[in-house]
Image 1: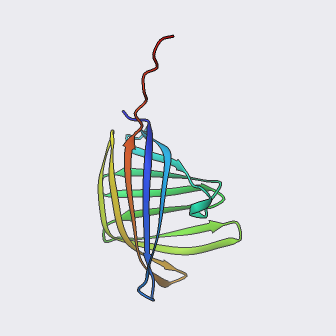
Image 2: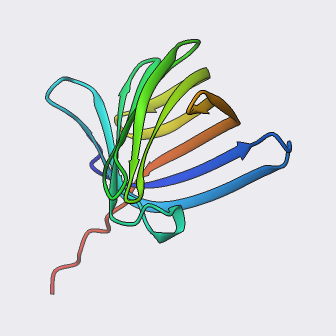
Length: 149
């Protein structure tokens, strides 16, 4: 099983103005199978994501994907195609209620890495904020064998 991985994350939001805004993050992480048998991807957020001091844990269970954030930002978002899931998004300056509705969940993640692609809408305080997409690509870190001295 792969443990140390490189996580490449691309996020895109299209709001009411129909102008796409995107972000990209490449960071080290871990990919393990947890005690419940789920693939679990963990990585640290940084200043670029606006969530410095936050750990993101993604639980991959087939077509159900749960994104949990702990630290300066706290939330738990559940993505299942065609289903709405409510959550509280807590930030240092306050919290907001939200609902995510996954339009597509493509989970091609395995023990050696892979890809995850989620297309969803988000509602904040009962107002749709637009279309969102998150794409993750996970690759094992190749550790070079050290040569004897």
